[in-house]
Each structure stands twice: as C-alpha cells, then as structure tokens.
Image 1 (cartoon, rainbow, N blue to C red):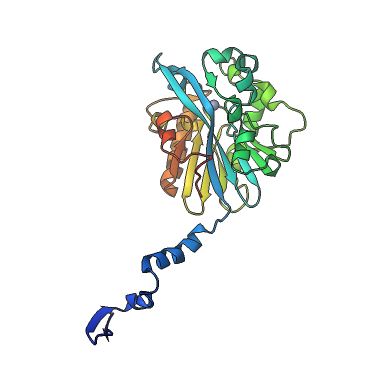
Image 2: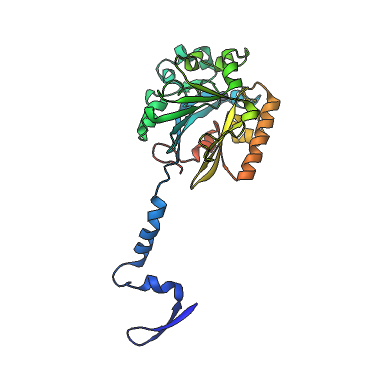
Length: 308
Ligand SMILES: [Zn+2]
C-alpha cells in the first residue's frame, strides 16, 4: 500500500506504508542498528538444547580396515563423540576412546593397536572435554552407546550420575564376541562395578524417545556390530541431524560404495544403511557419518562451536 505524505519542505513523498514506522526518529538513531537489535533478542534466547561435536584424536589405520577389501594404503580417521546439553539432563554419546588409551595404548588396547593406532592426548578424554564447555560431569544424566567398540566406550563409568543406554544385543555380545571382532571390545571399559545400564530391545524399541520431546531418538542399525544404534537428534534451530555413527563410517558407506572393514553381518549393515537413508530423506536431516575424515571437516566443532 502506498501512502502520500509531505516532508518538512512541503515536497510530496510517496512511500510504502510498511516503511513509515521505521522512518520515525530516523534522524536520532541509525535504523539498521535498531532493526538488528530488535531481531537479535529473540534469536539469542537459548532453548538450552545444544549439540557439541568432539573427537578423542584419530586412529591411524589402513583403508581396508575401514572399507572392506579396498587396499593397504594408510588411512587416518577421526574418533568423534557428541555432547547434548538439554534442560532435562545432559547426554554424552559414546565418549570416544577411554583416557587410558592416551596413557598406555598397548596396555589398554593390546594387539589391536597394530590395526588401529590411536593418536590421542590425555586432554582429549571426554570428561575434560565436557568441562571445557561448562558441563559438570555430575550433570550428565545419560551416556548413550551406539555400540561398545573400543573407540566408543570412553564414557562408561566416568560420569557418576549417568545411566548408560545401550542395546541389549550389543551388551551381551560385548562379553562373548566372535574371534574376528574380539579385539574391538575392551572389557575393562564396560565391565565396571556400579554401572546403571538401561538396555533397549532392538527393533521392538525403535525410535525410543529419550526425553519424550522428540529431541533424541535411537534407531536400531545392526550389522557393523550386533546391537549398533544410530541417533536422530532434532534441534530447535538446526532441525534434524542424523548421527549414523558406525552404521555408515564414511560417505562411501552411506552411498553403498563400501561395506565396513569390521562387520558381523554385511546383509544387516546394508539394510541399516537403507533404513537410515529412508529416515534422512523423510526428515531432510543433516547426515553425520561416523569416521569420515572429509565429512567430519565440514561440521562445526566443539569447544568453539555448536549446533542449537
Ligand atoms: Zn565400531
């Protein structure tokens, strides 16, 4: 709608009605600054729900140990883990390698170091990394395990008030793995006294909604490990983020160009990727693969940055 007015010199001015209010007092204050200030207030109001992406260093390995049958060349992968701040209680997802890995990797991991060599500083442990973003370890309500492999079991027993959420199939398998995956389970990490486990029931508890508010849901994705699960995190501003974890180590796994170098069922692993791809397409989620060096580079990293 156009409005006709006359300015102080008596000149006729035609303007858009929407611009009138913001013109008032324009000689007193710069308009853009006012508009910015007015908008900044609601934008900066935090919902208290934030996702932080950390890593406990890297693993130096060979391509074939990540992408089945794909060669002997060296391949270095990040070891990610995630922290979610939530008003109902903080969540640690996986926690990366245990702190002992940084102190005595051969003593803690044994011969598996020959295939997956952890490059980790003591300061990279998940407890100290939580503190770096102001999270008191006592405030962590849940430690959620995608599975119990050694580069994901660093948080178990390190947060005094946390319940540990894991798939029952994974918990049971971790105590009696097949010969080919035995090296990936460090019993000292998960067979600890005084732990409060909550065990989920595979497909029967699919889409388990941790807080009942849709922010954090588990998705059963077996194959790489018998009780592997992935996570759909829905943040107030960023929207849905799909943490595939090791159901898709890299984008090649996501795109059906590779099977995992370590797998208990290739058929289940392929079905799980298909299941996740359907969820990603239904929700338009941002996809975060488990150990892809290039994909990992593209995300906002803690402690400096986070998603909300
Ligand atoms: Zn794994």
